[in-house]
Amino acid sequence: MYDIEVTVKGAPVKWKLPDPTFYEALGYEGMKDLMYRFYDEIYDSSISHFFPQDEEEFAKVKEKNALFFIEICGGPRVYEESAHGNDLNEYMIRLHDDFSINKKARFEWLGCMETALRETTGVPQALKDDFWNYLEKFSKLTVNTFDDGSVYYAAYEPGDIVS
Ligand code: HEM
Image (cartoon, rainbow, N blue to C red; front, side, top):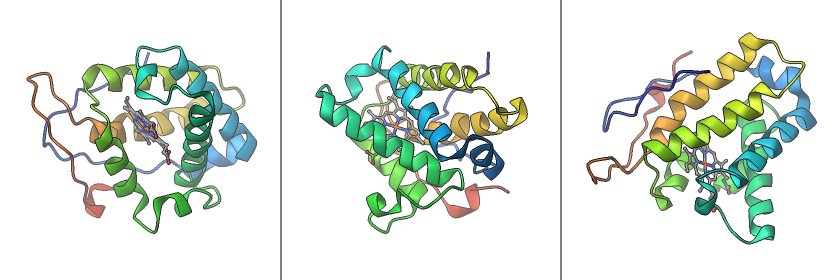
């Protein structure tokens, strides 16, 4: 089981982009397969209600989600058009502002990803761990609703990305 740190409201988050060798090990189709399995987990999770209930709309988000991860992991730039010229990280944080994401929702989301990753074969564990570290950190920035009932929308600065 991976550890998950709780999001501290307003605390800066430093994160590292995924090592491109994770994408290279999986390939385009392998990455898509991982993300489709992740969305199968989401569909059966306690956060499924956050996502479109219409099958076609759900399929669209699933596809876009796969394309984002292909690009952010160093693959072809197949998502950037969807970000309308915005910085990909900033765009991704702001996209989640529309949903009331709390600690529990983030933990569930990460749990779905952990299951999908565990069932992924042919990738060295160290690369899975590196990808996980990106998710665990970056996902803190998507949390906007806190247990005391307050709301806070995280900001990100390019200097928060460490190499
Ligand atoms: C590492 C953190 C995360 C990343 C990189 C990420 C990435 C994405 C991407 C790429 C999409 C599709 C965007 C599009 O339609 O163009 C998406 C959608 C969505 N994400 Fe996340 N996500 C993260 C964390 C979370 C968490 C913790 C939740 C908690 C519930 C969440 C909830 C959602 C929802 C509800 C949508 C659907 C949006 C819609 O209906 O259009 N995400 N996310």
